[in-house]
Image (cartoon, rainbow, N blue to C red):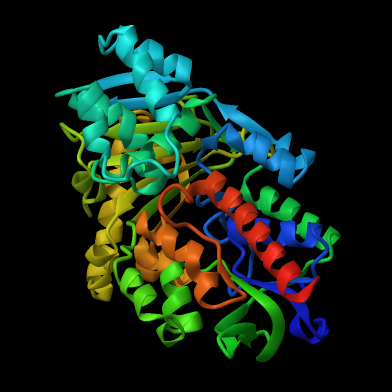
Length: 474
């Protein structure tokens, strides 16, 4: 990595945080000819798009599936090597008391399922897809997702579950969010199905880091930004600690930290107008995640039971039950050698559950350890319903809670999905309050997930580029 003693005297832009939005923003600014520095408080890049090693296994924390739009986005902004490594997950399994089925998670397959399995007329199904495909950011935000579902599928809790549950796992959506936040995300996924990155997150981030270095971006890890420095209300650089400490000047600063941390800690509310502070006070943190990781002993194997398993013993779907500390619902992401081609072949399984930070925050050390053990056991029992012999084949078990995510990402309440929809307005208007200070990150559900984060990185990079050229003629 690049360390602070080798930095340039000045930068056009400093990017704080190396999530996919921050990485993409840095890449686009460098492509535009700007001098860019990327600072990351963790020892490896990626933010929540990360991985870790235990025993002989590599576990992906968030590489569980994204829409086909990633192919086009990566081709345009990250190059063919990354684009060509995106592969489809063809067996998406739903198994719950209301229905059990396997799907490619494509629009055509959902149209078929809604007609053949759920008995909905073709006219209603096609009108539903036409409606959500036509949604955009500027639509009426008063329409809720539950209202959208009630219009097309009244009284059909089973269909509501089919349509919303996987999106809830992906970004924390609920029935009470604006319908556009559901429609835009769902229609993206419905385009061609669910995809992933062959070789895992570690390979993806390594390729992205290579691209950044090729474009001349300086990178420093284990470097924490303590505050964004303003002079007469405008960005002048950052104060850092970690690998080295000190002030680094820059014309623009882009925060890839959470929007709440950015406003409260990196800038400080005193820098903003009363109107902005009032709007900021209404920003709600989205919910968090728990995960349990299972490594299959080398030399052992497991049969193909699907790539993603949305499994639950809950009689009906509710967002509250999905986030319950002892939820009966979880997603199993199965990593077969076809997804991580390596020798010897490796099988890993990640169980993901939505969660509330406050349920975990107040536990003492003994209670915390006990709850983690219970969480692991619940996941194992559920997994054994599909792989009866799996317990004897597992040699590594690790687990993570919202407290874990908070420790590694510094996100407020360990949020895996950023903020609710109102956070997007705060993120987009930050630079209007503090010129030269920009934000890119997981905000408003639409700008969350891998595709949302990368696309938002492009949008913000364009904002920064335009501002630099206008303000500094660079």
